[in-house]
Length: 184
Image (tube, rainbow, N blue to C red; front, side, top):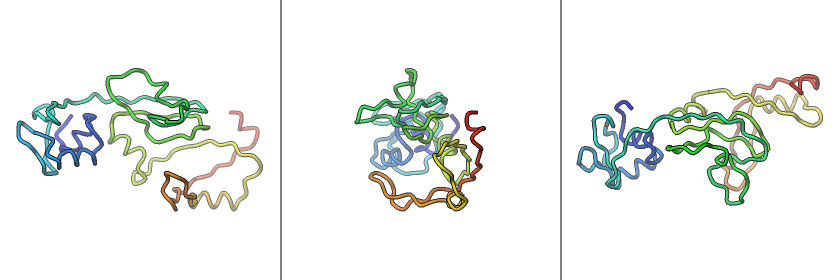
């Protein structure tokens, strides 16, 4: 792991998210080479510097990326209070914590990545990076030109509990396939 800002190094080592790591630093819970650090922007290298959080030395974590063909009926969550099958039920036992990169709805199947590399996850999911994703859907009935045009501009999603109200989807590129191609 190369030199980087302390909160990023802590996140990469699996201590906490970047934002939470900043809070831990500000609270005075971090020592670098025996000295308490409270300021942001400190550069560290876990190969050369000793970094302690709450008295525990943190070490570089190996980067893990897993690919899963998520089955239908499984929720993309780390914990489900309703007892539904979840993607974590299908993961092997690891010495690092991996999290899903993005989400697939319960009734959706397809490729889902997991990683402990927060920078990779952000690169793949944050809209500013413009990483395209391909979804193949089957719909009942006919989809009209007006509906396609709306999707291609982006649509406003209704407010649902736990979601951001008034969120607009990114513009979509729509390609229609005929019934004979759907089975492929």
